[in-house]
Each structure stands twice: as C-alpha cells, then as structure tokens.
Image (cartoon, rainbow, N blue to C red; front, side, top):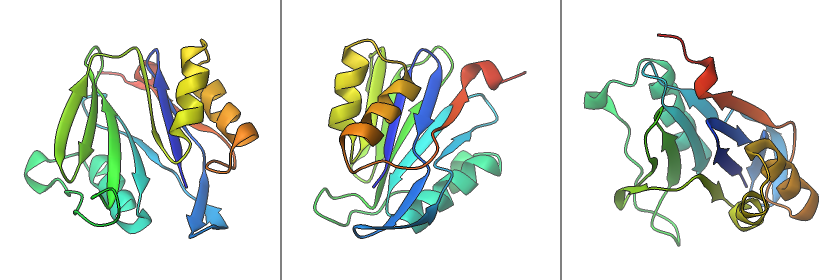
Length: 151
C-alpha cells in the first residue's frame, strides 16, 4: 500500500513497503527529474522502483519504462508527475492524463488524502492523516519539492 499526495509544489509519500497485507520494510517512492519534475510511484514495487530509478538516471524519454496492464485496475503501477508550473499528470498503462488541479493524491489511501487536501491540509499533513485514519500508509513521510530544484 502506498499513498502519495501533492500540493503547492510539494510531493509527499509514506515510506512503508508492503507484500500483500504485510509490512516488510521501507521504500523511497519519490524522485525528481533533471528538469525539476516531481515523480511519485505507487503500485507493484519492482516496476515502480524501476521507473523511479529511470528518473534518477536522467529520465531519457526514449527509455521510459511503461506500466504494464495487469491487475484489477489494469495497471502494474501508476505515477503522479508534476512539472514546475505544469499540470498534474498521471502516467499509467492506459496512457497519460493531465489535470488542472491544485492538489492530487494516488495510491491505496488516496481517498483519505484527498479529503485532507480538500480541507486545506498540506501534502505532508494529507499523508499523516492517511497514516492516522487508514491502513494504506505507514512509516516516515518523505517529501520532494519544486523548491529543491536548481537550474
């Protein structure tokens, strides 16, 4: 289970790693691309982590890993991507969609995170709310931000 939230140039994620319903460790679910784009990946861990490693290696568009259509939702993983000043984008097996939204959340705890964001919570507070009121997030909250990017 994973929850990732975005608001005001900050992306936050829980750090817990799951195997089925069991917690089995920690994972870094966020990465920042060379152009400052923030990425958060949720879903099947091997593919999601490979996507984030692609980002950390320079995000060459020619070699971008694509989510495969598997599972009940048709995706092996889903990515929340936000460029500086750009729209929120979701990257999944079924394609990429852009949303003009001031905040967004993905993952197993996205409903709780969306509720917190709607009520005015920051991305970090939305993940903390999900940890407190659900079972789809645990561990230390990690963040990345557009403010971390230097040209």
